[in-house]
Length: 445
Image (tube, rainbow, N blue to C red; front, top):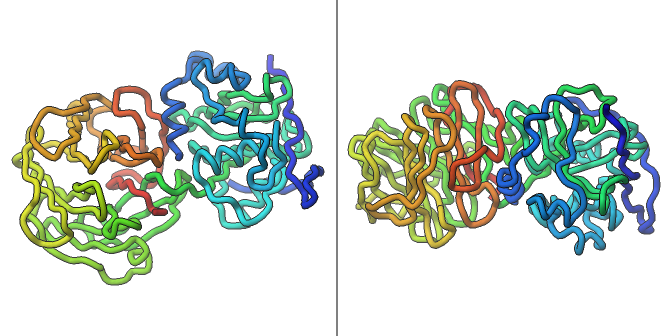
């Protein structure tokens, strides 16, 4: 039987530093990120067998208790005495969430007062932050004031994991009256009535988080791209990119800010520009030919410093050809890695120096990655996802290493994993229509 384990009031601070009740807000219609994703994927979900039988399950309780089971509290036990985002310090849901969003995930402090827990969605939406009913890792789960068991001030928590097809979410939350230290991780299952504890959140708030890769897609029929700054349900930017039949390329052409471009497989020409220029449809910044027509374009920081270089993979020979400079000229690195007919990848797999390369075998679903830009054995070999997917690679956690993922063109679903090993997806979501070309990049720079 479900029972209520009500949260204590989640208060803001007023200008004198004291707490006050919140006023009601209307319900809105219908997130380093994979620092959280990696941890959630590592600890897994030990209660999956019961996931559809009860509304929610407590995964751990208390700062030390959760840590002993692999569920972090991110040092809030020693850092929670401070105020974050003008919230009341200590055992407060709002201060805990503001701490994780700002200190762990790197979200910038809002230039406005968010208020009590149940005020956050309306305040964030009014200031241009994406608020919707779609969960994402790192997003803020919000319950309106008066929601079942939440009290008049509402409640907020941090989304730690999202189940397949949004079937469940794992959250971490502070200010739970029955929990040790007021802290716990809970798995909430979708599809239960709003009178069940712990009910599904009313809203999800997607504060922009820079420094980590997010995703996008390229429509090869239209020659257009849709990108999103964080893992949300809709595109944050749309732009024209080449013309039908061209291939997108993502990199940092000046070493400071994100860039995008395209490769024309009919001619072998690259056309690259800063992402900001692309968004305003300005002329390409760089245009040059490199390699023969009909190859697969690549971009990466081959030297480990400065701007990205370009390259290509020849699927007919299984060879990589990479150039440090963004111009026509000979390749600086030429080597074979793997058999012909693979799907190439680029990433900083070990977090040291420059990028390495790799490939995905669509027949087996196996990744093989190599740190060095030379022929030789792979440094990482693992299966992830089903065969027949399209691989992606990105710095999901905002750190120094690159993770991988797969995109299913039949369904439009992305599945991402931070660890370079077999295991469950740390994050799964659908974005865009079926049959697109997936993109990954740090669009915020």
